[in-house]
Image: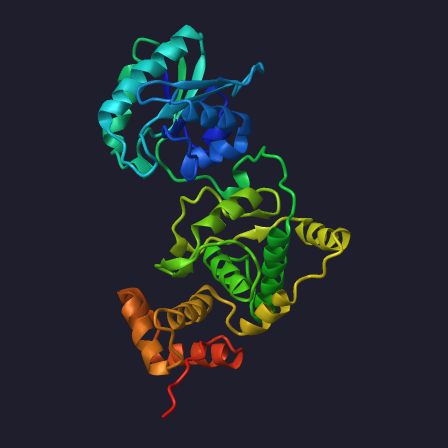
Length: 361
């Protein structure tokens, strides 16, 4: 029996939950990332199976928690090979055949199924849905909860069962920086939280000031960007902050991220117990961004700084205006010469522009 369902698949009242995965062991985005946090033991088993080349297209990788009641099984359904690849209909068809076989052999009475291969996979739900319905036509006694592609649940509703990660110098410094930034921002106007865009720029300047965050920043659409920072935020999500979610939201949606209750106290306790003072870079960064507490302003400030460090480095305002305008059509529209000049003055006042040697005659 097919029942079109809505809400959070990970909390569905079903004996088995279907998770869409790739075959290379990565659960980095979307519903797979939600499963990684909610069922960490399944992730470890799946990752090890991928390393052993046991996860293949057209074959289910079943994790049995051994517990009675709902959500006993996680059925990992490979919808693509590499995580960067697109999903293909033949792989969905083959996988559905094996999924039905697994349900029948294990006498599973109910199963929650997401929009297989849609979303990041790129397939059309109007084509995938009939395949799922047809696959279960011979199992009318099985309750199939079918979840259309309606977007991710709110981050606060995504279950997290991973162990709370310990604080480290880098994590504690980043969290204290976020807290300080939000205090300044809320002194100017009401703020729900901080966005991932702003956290990227704060981390960029922390590393510029010498904090060993070991992040690799590249030229991104919204200024300097480090993919590695997303892995840090993923680790902290549900423990020290909430709102990063499953990375399915677009950056420009500016979804708010909140520090969890107790994070400030935990960070203070960590600095105290480790006999480490809060790095001076936190205060230095707070002064740098004072008056720039918004996604737009931080992007502007970080973009101008990054452009100044390009090869060859430059201290010249006219050259920086040209570089920012040439970065992308979006930046050319958003960042006027006057705005670039304002960011230039702030960076210059804080000694953050390159000193370019001039030849003597």
